Structures are given as C-alpha cells and as structure tokens.
Length: 192
Image (cartoon, rainbow, N blue to C red):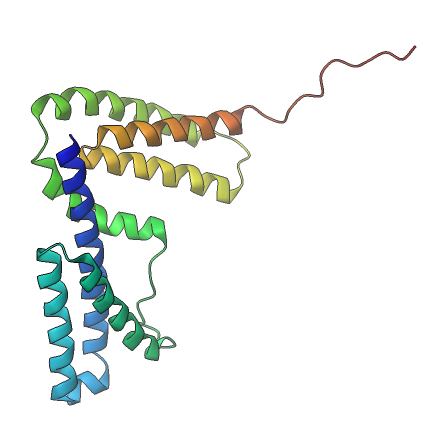
C-alpha cells in the first residue's frame, strides 16, 4: 500500500503541474506576441517540453520553476477576459482527479478494490444523504462539508483507503458538530 501511496502522490503532482502548464501555454500561444514572434513561440514550446521531460523524470522542482515562469509571463495579461486564473483548491482537485484515478486504479488488488472501498463508498453515500438534510447551515459551512465529501470520494476513486477513512472521519466530525446544536446552559440554579 505504501508503494501505491507514493505512486499516487507522484501521479497527482505530475498531473497537477501538467494540467496548469497546458492551460497557461494555450493561453500564451493565443497572445499576439506568440502568434507573430517565432522566437517567443519557440521559447514557449521549449519551456513546455522542459516541463514534460522534468515530470517524466520526477524532477518536480524544475517543472514547478518552469510553471512559475509561465505564470509570470501570463500575468502580463491578467486583465484579459480569458486569463486563466489559478483555480481554487477544490477546483484544482476536481480538475486533476480524473487524470490520477485512471493511472492509480490499476495498481490495486481485487480485495482492496471490492471490499474496503465498497464499504467506505457505502458509508460515504449514507453521509451524503445526511448532508442534504442538514437544515440551517451557512453557505460556507455547506461548501466545507461538500469539499470534504469530495476529497473522500476522490480518495476512494484513487484507491487510497487510509485517506478515504481519514476524510470520512473528518466529515463525520463536521456533521456531528453541525447537528449538535448550540451548547445548553445546563439546569437552572436556584438562589438561596
């Protein structure tokens, strides 16, 4: 299982960087400078190629430095209506999730895939039903609950049983806190 966790972490990092580089490179390629200046276009292609090679070699520091360079270049057009702003953490997770789950799923044993994950998926489904019935939650509280629900689902999709259990426990704690209601003052005291 530790090998799968390491594989999952590397796969996640690789796909997270790769997805963002693709978005930024596409945006930059549409800018006038890159359409008309062959040297700028070649430099952009070289940077993307360096990222791809670095990710293949698990050289995440090199890939992240190149990504930071692309972010810096793209920031010049931050006021453009199609400027690709960095996604929120929950959005970034959902964008990368499908890339990762397909690569990692093949590494799981049949027992893990069928037994442990099935039970956790059922528990998560029951918890989802509870979430939809919680009255009076603030929008931020509801978003936090759904975000943790999404993380647990993502862990299940990736076959990471420990992470799924951890997120399910976190979700249960949040639901209990929200359903417990305000603390009671205790029995009234009688003066002497």
